[in-house]
Length: 286
Image (tube, rainbow, N blue to C red):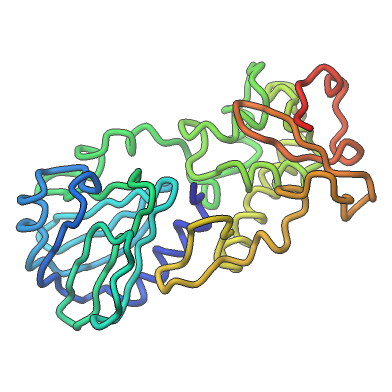
């Protein structure tokens, strides 16, 4: 699933390309891709609106429209939101096509059909239409600090990896960047979040922000279906230090990167750089 850097990359690309453009028509090719309202109302309601701003909350793409309306997109597993020329051949996974006044088109492609778009009527908020938005935690790039982490982790026996992945704590961090951040902070992913000391919290806050910002610069990570709004693959995965490198040598110490299941996800770490006294009791994946 695309994480914060991938979604931010898409938002920035769209912000530069579609702001000020007006929606001429909407064609829904797969009704499952519309969250609300009905397909017919979704299409008719979007027509005529001008796009004013594209921004992000967690892993959600938020589009401000004129007349205080809006459009929400969640890419989920395989969704792609692309700005394309009108004469481009349609992808077989095209689910929603939005024709713009400029002649370009905004395409929502989604192979697995888990992604969704929602129309936000005038007078309603993004949170009114998708209540999950109101349950999201802090934004890591702008709000994360040793103090906010201390408040989130206080007294928690949950693994630090699990705490980072919980969107109610911090919005937008997923498996890739949690692993990368914990490695750079020298913290084992299975360690209880509530046991981190002040210096470790400071280091973790710094590394999370550094990793996310670096990933945004590189356009995110392309592991399967993700691309930018212009169809360009991300490059972060080419520089990852632990994620996806099971059995390869750690670039810091030379030990082999290991993988184990934490919070239901495969977690990659270096046993030497991220030591943990409970490591031997954890369930590993070969």
